[in-house]
Image 1 (cartoon, rainbow, N blue to C red):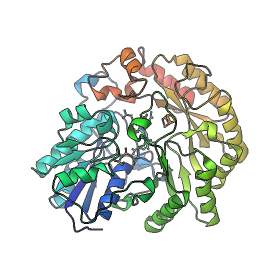
Image 2: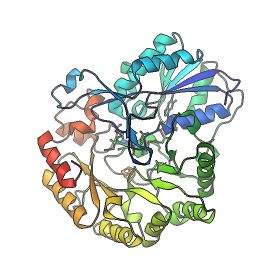
Image 3: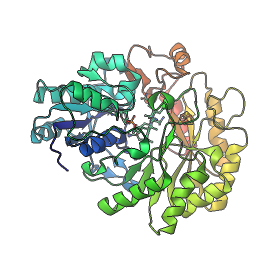
Length: 438
Ligand code: B12
Ligand code: SF4
């Protein structure tokens, strides 16, 4: 939909990394802004550097991004992996820029802190193509490392935190007032994210809540979304119907940090209403679910509603005070898995994220967790720890890292295992084999 207001160009930049895969990864924050700005009458254009269709398709609409190998940054020399740019070729990006009318402002999003070279590259090229157009940078990297973003990506402005209210004052300061004034105060009052702007979308990314009531020491959720807010469950159902009708999609990926909180008044209401109205979707929870909230009732509903990719957020199976998460007590994983099995889920359908690479974590603890998860009839999946500035664990991470974490977000890359002093790829490959991933 074209607005009559000032034209804006929104950009989802490339990923620069050793590895990246579209495992239900879409720029939902930027799409929320696109939906809102469109509703306020701006003329919104989007360039998604990670747009599909992907070269090699995976299950349920996931897939591999095209990759162009690039020289490994000097500070990461010696890593036996190919560094590169994932997504559109530079030529394709430039071609897209030339198809867009000169915008009044460029809005760039950012995700992982260590992907900032992709942000800097996209901003550099966009600036060259549209000299003099102001560039606003927001998103996760911008929020977690605003100073670094200013110094290394050269936007005109770094915007931190949720963008829905802030964006209007920044655009107004540039003289770009919206034709329609609408300041959303609640999550429920937001227009839908502009999913239709993504070409070749193969699944619906959806948020039913923002933020998380827990506070695990390695996690940045409370820095990014300080307020825990849930949507009206029936509003979520309407959105799912809307996108299924518009885009003819069945796959749905939940992006919530805390999807299972108070399930009787939230997720179960959504699933019951979908069942009542006879619509079929297939659900995926690439972000881990809170294991201790999986009751018999919840497990039954997850099965009936057709959840195909289940991921449980578990740091370690070891009990004790040294746990860093604040969300799982002894015996709770066993109970949750028993409910999931009783509901009919198979071992291969239940992925248990085990966090590896934490400060002071012994490899033997990971080995034990892998074995324990397998014994319990689930599939261990290794999730590598990425140190994040501002989190409770950050200072400890800085102290014990092999890298100078404070000097460059490139060192936050989870593939480096920056906080394991004796990390070796051979050991890690053995762990992956043990987990059955290798
Ligand atoms: C959903 C999610 C995923 C999804 C998909 C992510 C994607 N889009 O690609 C999946 C499950 C695939 C995923 C995977 C991973 N994730 Co993740 N993920 C998230 C999560 C929970 C939500 C992100 C999101 O979509 N939020 C919803 C939208 C609405 O919010 P938003 O993007 O922040 O946008 C708002 C603002 O930032 C702002 N904004 C955004 N853009 C712009 C632009 C402008 C101009 C302005 C003004 C404002 C603005 O306004 C938006 C609306 O309010 C965050 C935690 C969190 N709570 O944010 C972690 C998080 C981003 N993930 C993280 C990590 C570590 C990972 C993994 C490495 C996990 C692992 N160990 O294996 C992997 C790696 C992914 C990969 N592809 O390689 C870390 C980041 C670490 C870092 N160093 O940066 C986070 C912060 C979680 C944490 N540990 O604290 N993730
Ligand atoms: S429960 Fe999950 S989202 Fe919430 S603080 Fe802990 S790790 Fe972060």
